[in-house]
Image (tube, rainbow, N blue to C red; front, side, top):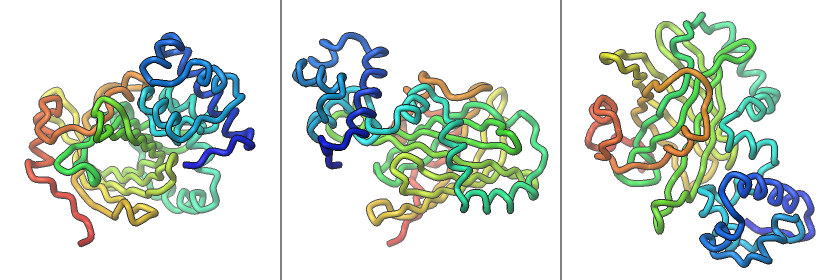
Length: 277
């Protein structure tokens, strides 16, 4: 990413978003010390008087656990991201002409759905980026004005420091239940570089609720190849995503003990990622 000091919009957005983060993450002096940013320079960022260099933007983003691009989002979209509220983003998405065409085709074919599938889930799949790793994302199905919608967040740790986040991806989409199955289609809305599809079926294991199925992704650039792999959802609770849910999203070793046994058994001990050769 290149930063231009004479463009007021990203400067103002960065300053607003940085102030939001500082209000929730302790003192400015502590942030500067841990992020290794000069305090006077940091104050200029907060005041909207200066755009950070690429190096400092990466340092600040790494400290707060975001990819650098996230810090320059429109402040309303940024607030939605950190608060776990994605209604505004989705409403903008559904007004797009191509999305409206898709909705007119699928809304009439959907079936009435019990509220049992609505709520917050942990979403698991093998990673197409990190070998032998399983992505744990935060996933939510909620009822819109006329049909079911969903959103989920992925975060990928840095290779250099697993405790920091190198990339963040956010997906918004639609849930269409047909003939006992749950179909999903969504769009990556931060990097704007991927479209994914899923088909799932519900499974009850004792007191635990899961959805097992398949997901496929088609990216917009050659660095992320198309893929298809197994997908599992673990139901956690009713409601919408919260900041606490987002804090648990990461890429895990495939044998990590925090992954539910039922999920590990379904995904298998050999990554089944199907990708072009």
